Image (cartoon, rainbow, N blue to C red; front, side, top):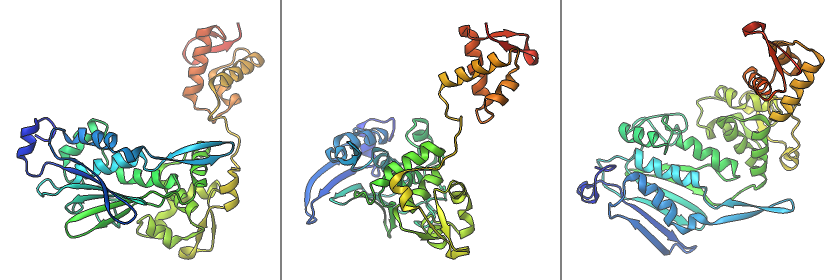
Length: 346
């Protein structure tokens, strides 16, 4: 009924979702209100309607970027959509209550009726996966509106921290769950820092989250960092921090739980990464030129020998595709078959 039924079908369900958007001024007075309560739209359509019909979601900041300016959204589209998806998919459909989007000058609050799924708390939401409405979650996943493993809250953390904003705040009361995202960008320089670090090292989601946290603070002890990441002990920090420490993106002082982790302020300002030279991100035309140069020096070379001389950090599959394209374009001649295949210049 919710997803395929018509308006009168959804209206018969006393717990069909209703969304209210309320905007407050700096004095706490209501200045605007939008309501989606006519049941003409399915839950999937509600997400699109809310995003498109709230004009405040189009507001952007202008931040200095050298000689230019870069635009940063006041509230990121990914964050807003993930909040709506979580509210619609994980709410208890046996309980009445509207979903509220409360927009204040400094924050956005998403208020959802009901409690968190059994086993999920504000302290373990980053690491616990419990799906209350299995079929609703499967439908939203198949429509590419959410991740199957319910990683939406992780994504909210990642986006907010990479934009120099505080982490989301989750509060559970006796009858509702509230998620608050802050509007203010605490450190604009974090945006470029995370972007360049990700481009240089291809960071994982965990690494982007922890790097964003440390970039916003002067330093965090191992205990503080584990608590913020909702980890059971400081030993669990290893997969989050190991590569960042190896690359000197994060530095540490001290031992055991008193270890303090921090990002060098000079590195944060200068973005001067000491990344080693690598061919992993070599452009296709440069790779083709290297292959032609190698085959010119070593006629009759096998692809394994070419790979070893050009660079083993380049994936073998990518090198093979480049060689096949050169043969197709007439840049190389191929002799033999299978393991006996050799290449030479025309």
